[in-house]
Image (cartoon, rainbow, N blue to C red; front, side, top):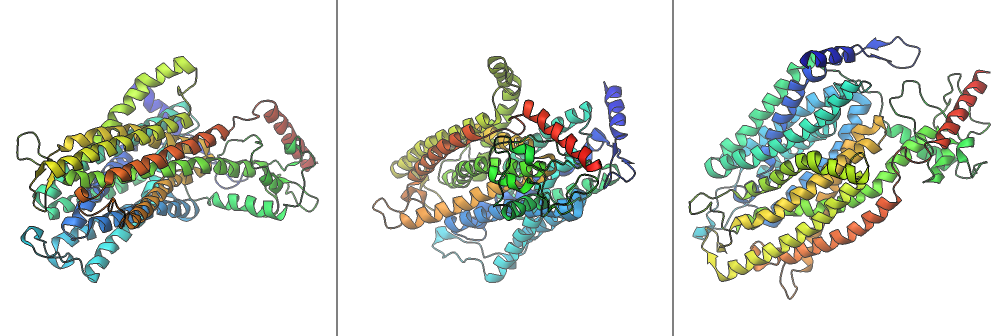
Length: 603
């Protein structure tokens, strides 16, 4: 078996690819496949261990070391996470247009190391954080100075730069190492995606247990010193494999092509299609010979964009069949690529609202754990509050192989579909589970608060609930199950429904959705905090959860999720999968028209 794999990799490595236009000499690309994976996957594993090892316990750090209020720390981290994820769109653009994925990943990995190092320095040096607060002795907690906040925010800003390049490029860069035109290469890409999600989950579990324990129970300085060391190992592994990598050069961002369609459609908005029943007959059909994109059939949605491909007497066609001025005439292929993006956006918006529940749960479950009995059995060992999120990861890790190995084959026999169910059905199930998760979270919080008021346990900063923190496991397990459906489903959906040259943007769109969820979560917290401050029921989100009504807040998110699920079902019913419409007779007819135009141009 090993010999067969190596032979396939050698065959893959001899693939010839066109550089530039069709008139230039073809150059060989040596795909190393799995031989490059120890460096690629090793880089990603240590990068995730480093980044998650710091970010997973940052909320507790800001409260306990920087003496921030809970609402301030939570809002700050939500905005930071949102900015980090939104910046991936800029990172994908810079990678595709100027630098390429290799250079972008190399620079971003070093930036992440530097950012983690600066955050560790805020712990090591006493002048970079406020003095320790002893609230139990009646001492007033002193917050951070302007200089201390500036140093901390500088570390955050550098981490944003690092994440902007790493997150949208690491998946695509790993896939670049396999030849997508061969069967063994396609299998390698699929296996790489499986390894990617495995390392991501593994890194989160290690960070939420071992690293968080060191930070909370041993030393913040030591605990925050481990991530930059891991990030340095990640950088070393990445550059060690430099000679083995396939380094795809920047060829220009597909965003330019999308902009051309919009501009030309506006310019030609007054034109009418001469064949309204068969609009593709009067549209300009051209496919670049070196394009990596698959040909897309005509679709009836967003027909206003079709005008960008109307061929007029003023439009010039070059001898190779392309438009002389792409800002005056676009091809039907370009129009359909933009339609792919526009069809995905309503689904993306629904996922944005759905992810609000996961964002809020990951934040407030830490506060719930802080004010619960975290002792392990009858021992004096306290589970760190941030470590409870590991149950979300465990649920996701256990469910994914069960789904792939047992559920999918059963559904395939039942429905006859390749994946058992469609990708949109998978996302919809996850959204439904998210609503259930919020309802369960509200029940648990109501129980925790009632017990805290009736059977409290003395704590260092006030009474806590005698309810065991293990009661938080059900809501986290359901959240992990929902995440396995929505997150994995979204990534696969974007990857398959976007044109091939837009897959970096597809990856960044997923993270932009998480960014939007973070900003929406921050807005929701601010609105609820201000609205309920003077209400008869009292502030729902005070510093002391025992004096608030976090359960009402969870019910509110569940209601919003139910409304969003209804919106998603409407969008899913309207959605047309890429290449699924008119792909038989229409596809043949379009191809005949394309060949006729090429013959006419040559004549």
